[in-house]
Image (cartoon, rainbow, N blue to C red; front, side, top):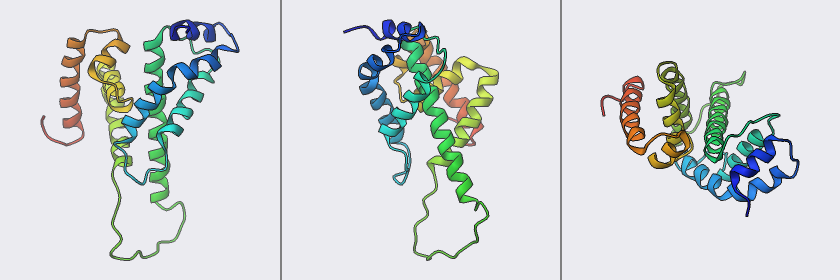
Amino acid sequence: MPDVTQILKAIDSGDPKAAGELLPLVYDELRKLAGQRMSRESPDHTLQPTALVHEAYIRLVGKDDPGWQNRGHFFGAAAEAMRRILVDAARRKKRHKHGQGRRLQQLPPDLPAVDGPSDEVLAIDAALAKLAGHDPLKSRLVELRFFAGLTGEQAAQVMGISPSSADRHWVFARAWLRRELGLGSV
């Protein structure tokens, strides 16, 4: 079976068949990453892991010149695509919450309130953007771990750094984000 990196290079060189060969090779891994990420979302979230994978894949392969360097580069881009999709979904949900010109109606008092992960995704996205301005490497590590659900070792491999460096960066980034998000110290 052809290597993912070879197929990515074929896509980069314009081979129309290569995109069809790529999905079966990476689908299970992308599905697993999406499932891990979606497990942190609220149960009423309308986006399912399969839809997240398909949307991310379309965004990745639909680009004119993705310039994939290797497998790690592809999965890093997949993490970024999943982040963008989840942030966009959270923003859409937030817009719906704030009315869009609809009139206020009273809800039954015994209806439980479900509010959580979409606000969390937006807050983390804003904090990550700020962290990226200070330290893009640490921001990328958080993105891979939080949005793509990669382990520290997997993220280190994607980023081309040692696992011990990834661990050090992760400790710092978590502390920085906790402070930035008002969650106190680690």
